[in-house]
Length: 126
Image (tube, rainbow, N blue to C red):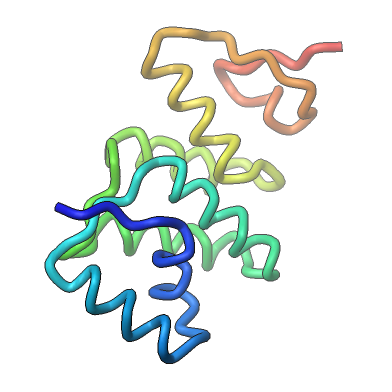
């Protein structure tokens, strides 16, 4: 299976450039693998473009259920998505970082982020 980069995944989600959308759809038609970093970058870009948290969560959920696209470590992404939905103000990428630390057995996650520091498994520094 071929991997997709952030800009390819964004074209598939945003559908904002007809030529690039066509190329992205053709590339991913046979299936595509989405690395965790691509998913985190994608969520960040969507947030920066003003997408609501609920819409970002729905997009991640759709990617987890997609027939042709496979997300790296879907169980970890599902746990990060659950945290993202529960904790307003915490970014999806931060939830994914926390769940990656948890999966690797490296808790607590030290952070200066006030909101992330409130999540189970994270410790706010300072």
